[in-house]
Each structure stands twice: as structure tokens, then as C-alpha cells.
Image (tube, helix red, strand yellow):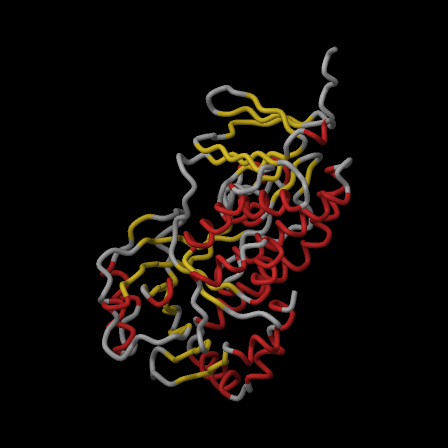
Length: 395
């Protein structure tokens, strides 16, 4: 007897991109009983970068994705978030991030290496029978006939699926066909990132805090990683030299020039790094729609943001959990599910995109604006700081 043809919804959801957002999406779908095929163009699953901060909103998604124990085992939980003035050395503000913050939001605040977060998601996704992962699979094109989708790989292979979730990042090829807004917006801000062995941190400067040294058109952030074995450094400055680019080597001499006249503690840390990786920071204008037919965007492909609220990965994981729930509720109609997902997400992610720009200006303030910032934050209580972030961390 001939086998009955598979229903369209029995075909896998095709996920394009094996970063944090794509892997979270595969895992979230599996936990909803939905099969997926994740296509990653690189030869392996790996994350470029160093440390990231993960707010209480992200920990709620770790619980939903079933990876909380793996995250708790490798994350660092800082005692405080601290801002210091890079010119004077004064402490501008200190926000406790221990038990007091955990009690307020019901979840902790942590920091983690990007590679460790991706690995936790990858290991959990691999363990799910409903998840298939292919590396070395670069998507060249796709089609959507209203009943299903087909992707064509660079080598000519075609793969049929039910729908597509594009998690292909800031330079998303799928976004152009849906939103059509061209290249990302170049912010004029450059980030240099490096990781230092904890033993090499200058004497007296290791601390279990996330510290931001706010300078004129610059800032330096540092905090421990991997149970305190490493120390993460991110130096950001304004520059019009670079128009676009990603993950190239930085110039230590330029960095020293941009941070001149700042506190000795800042230079002591900067001087410890011989090789920096450089990112040109970009984002895009918020949009209300990132779905077309059976194709939708997730994470940076949908709403890329500057890093000043430390929410890029957090928003991608929020997207993944939300989208999986919507697709489970409307498995017969991916377009309806995708539309419901973007409707629930677009205002929240737009606010994060906009506020990240505001925070960047706030951190890099000069002249009287710097003085106003210091006075404003200096008079803030911990409870006021918590209340000011409820919209973000309580979401």
C-alpha cells in the first residue's frame, strides 16, 4: 500500500542561522513538539565574541528552555553594577545585584561567555529528537508557494519545509526581501573586546562587579567570566574612521589615544591586552513587521540593537520562546502564528532599540551633560534603580 504523503505541517520548520537566537528557536520549538531543521553556514557551531551580560528577563527564558542548571554552572553572578567617572575616578552609582535584586525581579543578574551560552543551547538542542542540525549549509535562495517553503543551498541542494525562521543576524539576507531597508545603520561607535586571564588582572583591580568607566565619547566595561577564571574587557569609543565591518583586529595605539587623560586604572587594564577584536557597532530603525508569508525574522535579523542595554541575546531568546508558543497554537497556519509573534514583540524590541541608543549617549556624555548625568545617578537609590529597569527585566 502506498504511503500517504506527509502533511505540510509535518515538514520541519527550517531555521537559518546557528547562533544564540537560532539555537534557542530550535530548542523552544522542540519543547512545543515541533520538528525543526537548523541550517548553519559555518563548518561548526561556534560563537564569535567574549562576555555578555544576561538580565533577569533572560533567566526566565533559561527556565522555559530547560537550560537553567547549565547556565548557573558556568555564569558569574556579580555583586553590583557600578559606574565610575573615567576622568575623576569617582563612583557615580552602585546598584546591588545580589540577593536584593534577585528578590525584586525574582531572577538573578549574570554574566557569561557567549560561547558558553551557545554551547548550553546547542547541547540541549542536540539532545532533542525533534531537532536536526546541519553545518556547512549556506542558503542561497528560498521560495514560498503559500503551502510550504523550499530553500536552495549554495551547492544546489533543495530542502522542503513548512516555514522559515531566519536568524541570520544584522546583515540578514532574508530581511531585505521582507523589510527592504538596505544596509544597517552605522552608529559611529567602535567596540574593542578582549579576555584576560584573571591572574593577569592588575593588582587590586579584580572585582566581582560589572564596572563601567564612563568617559567623554568612550567607556570601558569589565567583569569576570567562567567562575572567575577570566576577565572580560570591552572598550568603546566614537570614531568616523570606519563605515562598516565586523570582527577584525583593533589598533591598540588608537585605543590608547581615544582613552587619553583617563584614570590610571583604565589604562592599566587596557595595557594588559596585546590583541583586540574590533566591531563596528550598527543597528537599524525599529519596524513593526518582519514577516512575509511563511517566513519570519528573529533576533538581530528582526531588531538589531546597540549593546548599551546588554539585551541582544536576551531579546533573541525572548523571541524564540514567544514564537514557539505562537506556532504551537497555530500549527496549521504559520503566517498567522508569525504575525501574532511579531505583534507581541515589536513594541518591546523597538523600545530596547531606542533606549540602547539613549544609554549610549548617556554613558559617553561630555561637558555639562556629563555633570548632570553624574548628579542624577548619584542621587538615585537602589530601589529607584530597580524601578527604572522594571520595564526591561520584568518583561
